[in-house]
Length: 469
Image 1: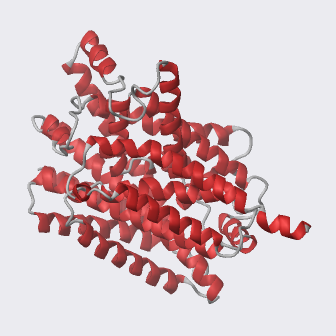
Image 2 (image 1 turned 60 degrees about the horizontal axis):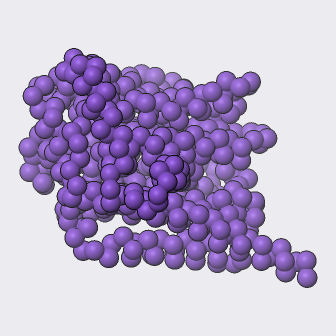
Image 3 (image 1 turned 90 degrees about the vertical axis):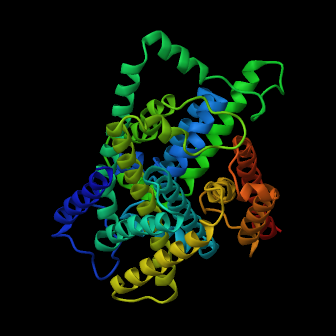
């Protein structure tokens, strides 16, 4: 019955989208140059519901660090949206023109776009790996069958991107946002009926405690210092994730075209809603034991209620589609811009299709290789540090308004990524199992963001000093 419900969800979503875009085929030239998309702010809220976030970092922060670290992630997300809006302020024309202006003024655009491409491909792979784990646990599939099923779901997302570009992705985001919101409401209702108010407050209070052994617990005598550091670590994580997301740039650009202050309000709502909505899901989880992470904990809690389990699984699949589609279309867009600069063409629709197909093949192949590792969060751990490296470079160059010495941008990004991978992957067991102590990489990732920003800011002054001489 669950399988039938999920299949019906996919079919219904695809039909809704196809009916909505039947009179809006992609253009032959600049097929992704489409700013007339529906509800971009709501779609932004939807993309934060990634599987890596829902079943990894966010619940871990809430259950082991407490609500302050979780609020920090939300605050960092809001700050990133406002900073992106400020960087785009005053630009006239469409979003594609904005990207081309950025490309033409920033000397290291080629390296920057390539780094963006790598991160978006990695994010898509991470989502596929988490989806495979859900399929394994929820439906009892064999490992190979779960891999095939995950790729089949990914094909649906690929078709979304291929048929309508951003317009299709943004429309499906709305359906997926409503689905995830419905999942959260059902979980909240189940939680309210199973616990009395005193029991609920006691359970919620127990989940707001900073446990020892994580982040800076016990390092300082003053608890207020620890709380500030908890908030700061979460803030930098949320900030770095959205700062280097091309999909987020487009949504913010479109929302910013709204006159008056309504656009700012929409950005704040988009930043806050995912974290408010996910709270019932986190509160429904049992206390997280220290040590090896058991990915079956949450599904086992829901196994006794088929309606809740079905709604949760549909929400999970919706989250996957939203995040996967956004990552795939963003990777394809930056590749298309780079190809346009190298070899201009009057008609780019075929090029877009070839690039999207190539990227899907790359994601699929690396996913098959990555699924052999026992720890499904391995790619998410790598991205936790590589996103801040690129985010720091973007801050240090003031959103590409200051150039670095020749080759410095790529060198800083490469060294930062290699250093992070060596640091996090030095323990071979990390490839096999996920552990709660992996959450300690979050403050380290924040330090990476600050170090990358400081280094690139210092390097950005070198050309100016030479010119003055």
